[in-house]
Image (tube, rainbow, N blue to C red; front, side, top):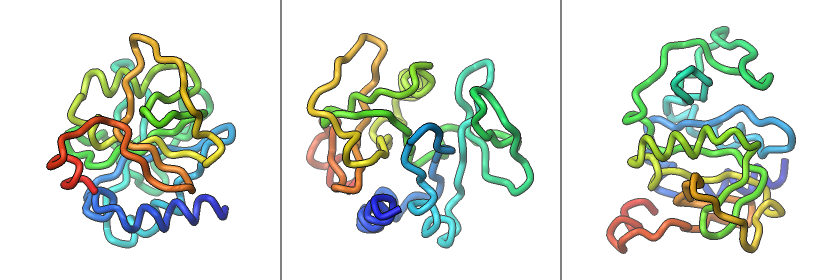
Length: 173
């Protein structure tokens, strides 16, 4: 809980988080960092929180509507509400098993987030891998299908992983 709180404090200083009107989050499984502490202040500000659902086309993101949830693929809770357009997502929180400073992440191996970022490249500069400090690895192997995330967030702080122009980077800080 202490690491989640530290990460929440870090996010509160980040303009990309503070200014987002729609944040895509996730339901944690198997030791992933629980983003609830990050999401509480956003929820209080009236930010739309959306969560992934596995559909035949891949991941879609649906608003968090009380009572509109089911156990979905892989035993993960999924929303049953109607999906939002991916263009509405202003910050994409991505779960992970491990991540390196270049934004290469290991998940649970299904490739849903890599396929999403390949199909929706505008989300890439607004993608952040969220994990515990001990999940930050020096260097992970990269495969052809891996799409690096733009940001890495742990309780130790926020790192810019994706090479952005100075103006892009300052606009997203």
